Image (tube, rainbow, N blue to C red):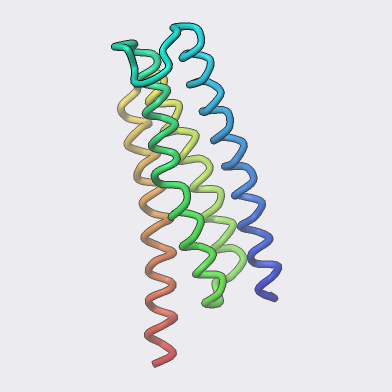
Length: 133
């Protein structure tokens, strides 16, 4: 499959994740406005949870999208990209939902899903590179 088509697959998952990111941003902004807190958390537990869900998403998603793009460049199969995209979207939704609700189990599943995508894409890139040597 041409590289452009592979990157288009990742663009679709990036767009879904972008929507989730905006949703988390809006939750944080609404809480800031309601509580009149412009900086920090003001010891507001709800704002703390929403900020961490948003920040954690921002911390992990860029790398978790860049590495599959690298795997696509190295010749990853479309199913690999779809599996990673679906797993990443589900993991990030589960993780954010768990932080917002305080459910530790789903938070761990969300992080495991995210780590799996990062590890699988990294492994694909390294194995493909080693095979070219």
